Amino acid sequence: DAGVTQSPTHLIKTRGQQVTLRCSPKSGHDTVSWYQQALGQGPQFIFQYYEEEERQRGNFPDRFSGHQFPNYSSELNVNALLLGDSALYLCASSWAGSSYNSPLHFGNGTRLTVT
Amino acid sequence: AQTVTQSQPEMSVQEAETVTLSCTYDTSESDYYLFWYKQPPSRQMILVIRQEAYKQQNATENRFSVNFQKAAKSFSLKISDSQLGDAAMYFCAYRSPRTGNQFYFGTGTSLTVIP
Image 1 (cartoon, rainbow over the protein chains, first blue to last red):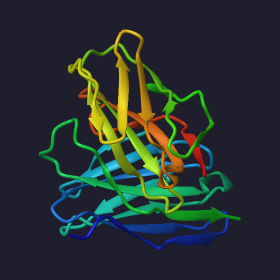
Image 2 (cartoon, rainbow over the protein chains, first blue to last red; image 1 turned 180 degrees about the vertical axis):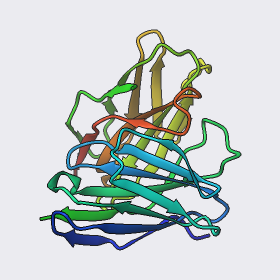
Image 3 (cartoon, rainbow over the protein chains, first blue to last red; image 1 turned 135 degrees about the vertical axis):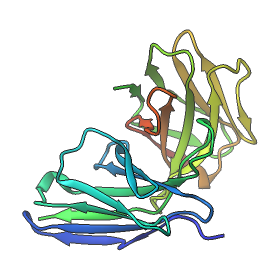
């Protein structure tokens, strides 16, 4: 049973560039959430995708955008990278029909460094 | 936004001993769910234990248990018979029907297990 997979593992970009991170949800899951975890901080919610649409969004600028594909996989795009975007980006999947006490299932994250 | 506070940035425990990690949260809601996640160096967030606010009984999962004090808005994690593999970052998280799909995480506690 494949868990949540993310690619790439590490990424180094320059300020002003654009980046795309990818995520495949756990088998049987249809919802993907993205979190940003800055160094020494807890994860912060960016947005969630379900049925190929953004269902909920956290307090992140429009530079952060996403997409969900028919196979439920997802991409996180960040434009005009800033040094402050350097962080671990975590993808988490869940099933839309699950209850509120259901946990998120996380991938191993993508470490983005902006220089 | 919901606030989840972990006031202990670092904790240490002798192998086989017991340690308690603290978490407090700020909410005006009565229906919510609390989680403890573990993040080892592999970076993957792993669910440790969860608690529904409407349940008075404290959750227990093998060596892990919680002390849920709803009136005090406190949700501490007790790890008994600590093992070397318990060394990790531990995050407390909050979710409610009002926050929808967004989990709110604390800043984490780094646990060191001393052989």
